Image (cartoon, rainbow, N blue to C red; front, side, top):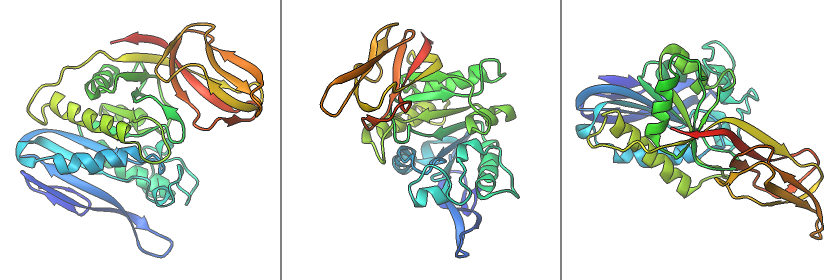
Amino acid sequence: MTSLGSASAAPGEIDTGQLVIGETRLGGDVALPVAVVNGAKDGRTLYLQAASDGDELNGVGVVQRVVPRLDPAELSGTILVVGVVNYHAYQVAEHRNPIDDTKMNRAYPGDAEGTSSERIAARTFDVATSADLVLDLHQGSTSRMIEEVRVRCGGRHRLHSECLELAKAFGAGYVLDQKGPDGQLAREAPDEGVPTVDPELGGSVGWDEHSIQVGVEGVFNVLRAYDFLPGSTDRETQVRAAGFEQFGAPTGGLVRMEAELGERVSTGDALFTLTDVFGQEKATVTANEGGILWRTRRLPQVATGEYVCSVGTEVDEY
């Protein structure tokens, strides 16, 4: 029997339930939706979580579509799922937990006696580090972004190659291989010996069906590649960026992008042009080095110095 919160499943069974973390302001349970899919045959354990940032909903869409398709009778091993991590932020569709103004994906490994976010991080970190592999589903929040997988442990980490292989198995097409900030699950869980990656499923406000489908396919690619499910998946070559350069607006105005997401750019290529409201051009910003247009703002209006786009640099394939 395998349990996660109130969900409990014997081999060949699936169950859903809740993982209670604490209480709301009204005294009700802070209860995260969880699932246990316990395969009929022995195998590895995969931990899957979504919405640790409360407005990044595409991962929830992935969970919504993946879990009903899982047949424990065909499965080798166990899948543990937390469908929504950032309970309070999800309720109000905000990025940060409004109870303690914390970005959840900077709170790992957490503190069982700490703030709201630290307590949630501690409980989910315990589950994550009990697994053999971890997928922490994210997206670009309000920015437009290509679908990618982030390897955040750093190139000198003892599990770097394992995390790269997990990212390649997911198969989104692009990988950002750059050490992440302290407190990210994909940075902290490898320190405990668990290969962990952070699929960033596009960028939108709300719910993007294309990005959700990329995530669904990625999860099933991993399940086949690591023998949870029968069948084979060809590990396609991934485009990898090891750097990330951000560009801001030199003036205020309206942004007109001159390159498309995923497009390769060279030094001196125009990235975007700024105009006033009458269409008069004010400035054009160009790439400082070669790379791939990785991420852009969604809305066109900007003030001086405001973020506009990011270019993935130090690009190769593996």
